[in-house]
Image (tube, rainbow over all chains, first blue to last red; front, side, top):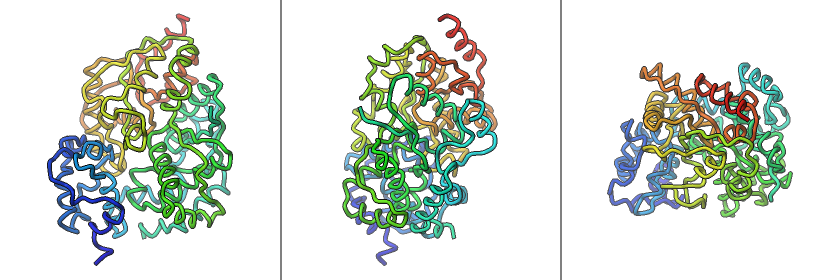
Length: 159
Length: 299
């Protein structure tokens, strides 16, 4: 099925992971792989072979530092591929609860990290206005953001 | 020189407002024409929202960019994440007619259109390219003499094909900016390594994310510096707020002060550390605070 095909979707985005020769430059360059089970070379192979990559926990261990993508001798856009695969997974409801929470914050406040009481005080102490000159201070702008996110159907991911 | 509007993002105004204040007073002191950007939202954060839904990421970034277009000003970011999202989105929307049309359908719902008339800058590359270290040195009132561990952060320089800031393996421009304040950029192992916060790691896999920060901090500690200087509030948060979190998780104490470049520059331009919000960091290093105080008294 086309819509379920990870490889097909990557190809449509102009990313050809089949060029990978499994050299391991990516894995050797990966700072996360020093501290987690993330093995980028293996993850790419997983994506080449199976839809099960959508459930691969290592997908979410990438900090998107881009070392692997910069150094790949086959010039494969590895991080872009990981982001695409994550997105396919997220649309199937496969994502961490903490990330669902980040979406909720954006939907409600227009900020992934909204202001809190302690930081309003810090702002005042510094001589800044209590609320920053963002959607936090501008209800009309916040409503604009909410309308836009509704048009994009972002909320459907966490339904 | 381009006229600018300051894109605040989330972490700076809502967690580290000292960086906002420091940036504003430094820009004013350097006579840089930079206004607020009223009504801006989350950029949105590249590691998470681009992971979840690329069209949404592009649309919301597109909206933020149109705010700058309306003001006929370039966006000045002070965060690598905001820079990554907005510069990448701006580039994509300018280059791809298909994605521009699709994004403009969404933006049309709020009576906006992406035109492609503005640029997205990051304060580090802006100061380096458009102001220059020479002019910064001239403006310095207090050569700081601090030993600094420079932390570039990933998205300032990568993906390098879109950034055009030279070598991603061994960049120099940020070190030069730090040295323009009369400080010394100290070499250390794994200097270019990621802080571990990005890609949704800090929010989603906290303990492993902290293990990465712990590694970075251990290398910085070996180098024996006065402080870390970064160009990104998310790296800043990971390396500063991360220190008490690492103490709790792994029982290790570092006590290394963490400054955003705007705060370091602010010190060198003669502003007191309280005005720059350095005391509002999680790490309260008394020795460093005394050192900053003696800097004021010497001059």
